Length: 219
Image (tube, rainbow, N blue to C red):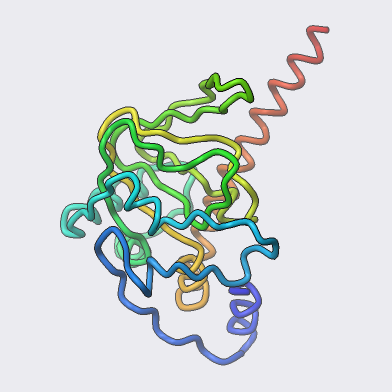
């Protein structure tokens, strides 16, 4: 796992190789869009890769000259993410892939195992829990700066909810392989991203705890 390699590097282990350049396009056979998913899950469930999902939802690559300044602005203004200089945020963005997705497209499916997470740069997405009888319970709406799918990216578990674009959206995508490469080759940036994810997950846990406490108190 990348975290073991990170520990070895920080304690004087062999330096990791330089990362391969990020690829543009909805799918590729290597690099960012590799369909291989190493060391992320041990069961036989099919992994829902971003390469396949991008093709399904009609995702179109966004020119980095347009996308990267947008990412730097949104990431730098978010109080829940680790503080980084603009140059560092730009370096982090090179491990991301930027796409636009039309409205009414499901970019994350409930109960699937995914190897990617999304950062919303523009637009609005619905976060729904699909009920056994087919109804959908709206849990939240995600907007610029929100992250989606990070729990499955970190623990290789199944998705709790479905995420669907309500408007045309601009998204930054990072998959498991690119996250591992970031941790190995840019450990400071990788740890900053992981710290940001941890802060957001902690915030969600506190919100759920507060709701549960209020529910129990009312009984």
